[in-house]
Length: 585
Image: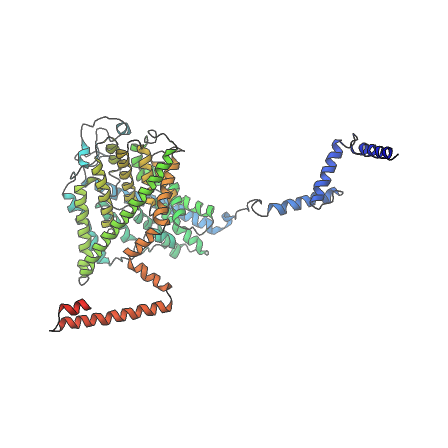
């Protein structure tokens, strides 16, 4: 009886559960909807209520957490200040494109006149063979050049009169600095970018001194002068003519002026904008800043490019265009790039030491001559100019900022016409000239000379280790060596990629070498420590962070030292002075 009752109960459950109506589409959809809606606390009975609740739930989920949609960007184009800054940037781009053309012609053509090899052709200079113009076909082949001009690159291949020109440039710079009382503590390009301000009262003299420096053979680049040209004009306009209600737009306009002046320097305006995003911190949103900065850079680039065939650094692209084709990417290239980054960091440290040594030498000369301000200003510049000229005579590949010799270094170095010892000596000579130029009163930037050192290091590596492709070694060193002290790995990596037409996979080793070099030198704090040792004023600035007790103890020690010094001077005047007292003291 009990078994019969259980069987009837099971039959009833089976009919209710597995009837065909249960598995109908409508029932499945209805049950699923009820289950889902009840799980989120919504009653499915009222369709209108259910729809509104679902929309509300979706909006709530859409605005929460990392899973929510990206918030809409600010409508900056509705602000009249944006268009005001945009138009100023475009106008400055047109004017600065012409001004940059004049400046670059002066600083690029004049050195080629006094360093000419006698074949005065349009594109010729002391290191160029007019028979083949260092074509890329010659680089990747063993074709001999009949004019044999690579001999001008060898040891003592320069001209002694070069020292007269560089010394004269140093004399002229010293006279100008003394006559106008040009300050020694003006901020550099990096500081001006961070402060959004350029002292436009001194900008004309900075541009003049930089033009003389570069035309006279100093181992400096044009970026300092161009930054002052655009930044000074923008600072003057925002402070005196076009004043903004929002100070952030004034700052952004100054950066736009600097970007516009550098737009013609690189082979593409993209690099100028990228450089300022890496070096500075534009005050507005990312896209708003990018649009304002890009406008001036693009206009300047178009004006400059419409009047000349190549931008400043693009001239080496014709000789390096096929280096990437001679380099087939492999996974081991990334490990090689890591090693190149370490070597670049070591070379960067050596370069900093050269700059510090020359700074100490020239500063000691100025201290000895401080009783005569004229000599203290003029003589160090003359001595630095003479030393630069003699190094150029002994190592011709060190001449100028490197724009004249980059093609020759790549082409002749790849063909084995430049010895490894010559290349290594030229690299260290270039670092020495950079230190003399930076500390001898000359005015200019340091990025482009370091790029030349990177190319020299890359060609040297290819000669010493032939299994390392020339494109890999040159591109990696060209990005990694300046990246050891410059916080712009993206700009430097892209510069090497664009100049040598590097492929997609080949960009990975270039970027690896750049970030490795920067991490070792700057990321580790090594650069800041070396800077403090070379510049005591930085340590004095840090003394403000010390406690009052530390400062009091420091003052007491200074007083004790002063008393001891006076006792020592009095003892020297005493007729009973002897060496024993001096030793005890």
